[in-house]
Image 1 (cartoon, rainbow, N blue to C red):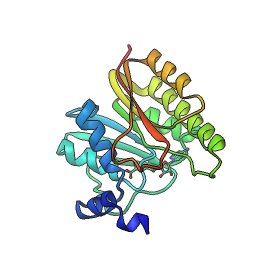
Image 2: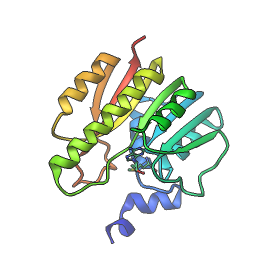
Image 3: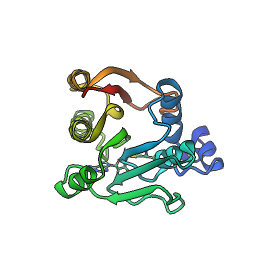
Length: 195
Ligand SMILES: C[S@@+](CC[C@H](N)C(=O)[O-])C[C@H]1O[C@@H](n2cnc3c(N)ncnc32)[C@H](O)[C@@H]1O
């Protein structure tokens, strides 16, 4: 019921996005300007595809998106300038594919593990996923590139922030207004990747 009546969900539907999460990226972009005007963007945990679609629309055809997820993208997602790989980012075949398409100007990850309701378990799984995303960022992002990662708050958040500070000149935590009030997720934004 909440999904149906939610303001952001209604707005996403009206504007042709498959998920309300698009407004989180919109806020992040408005505040931090993480997306390149042109170039290649890696969208990790991309399904159903609203972030991918936002990037493609915003760049007006000047950005190419490489999207990856365990699940397929929504069928309505435009195909121009889009490469989709269905796979698990912890698996060697997926990593090899993503590396084959480097370098990226930006890497965005809205990836999240399926939640169990056990906060400690969910947080630990989110952390492991973020570590994996940062490993991919180290290997595939251009110097000067930007990275956005979603993380469940608690646990090793500080360690991840410290890790990111070793990779990026600037790292900020940001919780978009479009995040559900009961959610314990937040985003870390790394900018200006070191050489
Ligand atoms: C919140 S959704 C992303 C929503 C997307 N940003 C959008 O706007 O449409 C999180 C996604 O992370 C994906 N995911 C979780 N673990 C993953 C993994 N190990 N490899 C690839 N994708 C993963 C899930 O399948 C899920 O589709």
